[in-house]
Length: 186
Length: 184
Image (cartoon, rainbow over all chains, first blue to last red; front, side, top):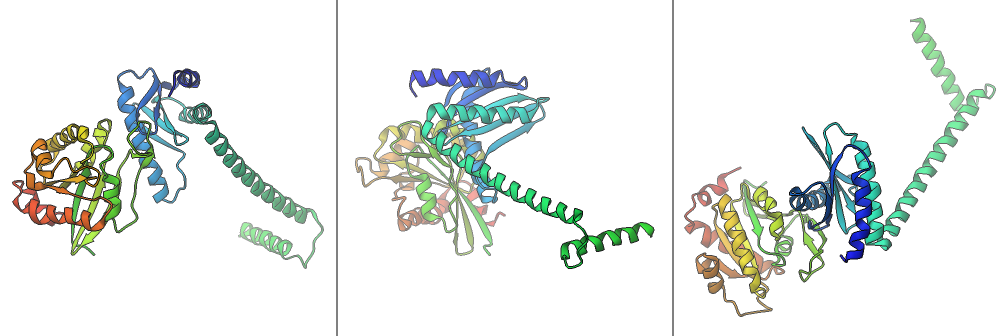
């Protein structure tokens, strides 16, 4: 990694370190566990780099073998704090060490956000490819949401339309409500 | 259903063929934790977690655990060697510079486990300068516990295990080799 890239990476790392109060320190390491740069971790950085890479490597297989698909993140909870590890594409890992009382959702959110930013610096091509994949996933989500809404809307139109004995859906709804009344009357 | 379980740890310096060894022998889908290597180690990927494979020999199920070679992953050596019944230490014959590292790894592991150990000298097709006996002397193990192995070939890898169980284990001083197969 050349000096210029390294300087560029310092920016998102600094932003992550100061993004939310819960974060005690953070670290960027290569995917094979060599510390690149860190904030406030000092002696722990080298060891945490290797451990983060391992945990992500193992986590990836755990998610896969467990049938959970591609791994998004690994999160460790101790009695005195948290460590979250997210992948920076296939190039690096980003670890955040957080205090016990932190809002871990915020820590994870910012970790993910800055991991994406760092990938944009390290490997723009891969970042774009991942983003596109994310977009299609979003579109799929939106598509299914639209279908659900349409289905709901059509259901509502049934309930407001005049009674139609030939309509099975309406008949069922009718039956259902009479059953409920029956139950209430005891 | 196999009656006994034997856990074998596969260790050694980077690029000595540990993952290949486990993959070659495994009967079940091989689990690896390969990632892009950031250092120039002569290959694209490197293990950061564990490699895992299993194989059945008669009534023994052999569990093969491969660990990363880099010293910064020594916490994994410590965790994974726990409960191992035997150790296969692979050393690349064409990289004598790695012998030092191999010796360090062996010394580290011997602090935690005292088990039958076989040294597999890999990549001997690339260099024949280092005969097994001399590597054995350097690593401080009996020269006859060092064998040439081609990690890519199933026969060769099986031969290493055969030597481990039929030759090294019976004459090993450690009592663990005696009871190892009756565990679990």
